[in-house]
Amino acid sequence: MKNIKSTVNSHNKNILNHKEKIERKCNCINKEKCPLNNECQESCIVYQATITSSLPDEKEKVYFGVSETKFKLRFANHKKSFANRRYEKDTELAIEYWRLKDLNADPNITWKIKKKCSLRLAGSKNCNLCLNEKLLILGFKENNILNKRNELVSKCRHENKHSLVNHKAKR
Image (cartoon, rainbow, N blue to C red; front, side, top):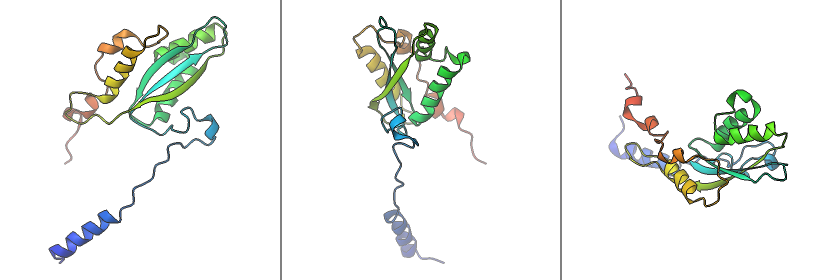
């Protein structure tokens, strides 16, 4: 049986020799086509999507969104709503995309990270992701924003995920 000293030394050795897994910021095959400037693997971000079109009278529109998971997963959902008409009402960005498609315009969307946030802590009353998204929407002074004002009073969609009610006890 091991004595306490050897157990502590073994534990310390494991911790000190533990090499952090280096995560790549982008896993795109073609780095030039990465939607988020080679940072598509970032999570807990507030992002901005700017949609433009080939129509001369159309002004560019701005949409703010959040991604608690890696952005690439969130981006896949956006792509789904752009590819399939059945999902056209999923986001205000998708609604605008399909409106431009119906006008025979060629919509183009550019993406960028506006804010990196920390995860919502269990039991915390505030969600940094949702609060920062709301601050960006409120602080946007131009009238070309796609986000609706009712998003400002909506409940945090990450709250239930961290609730103890949703976690099952292991037996």
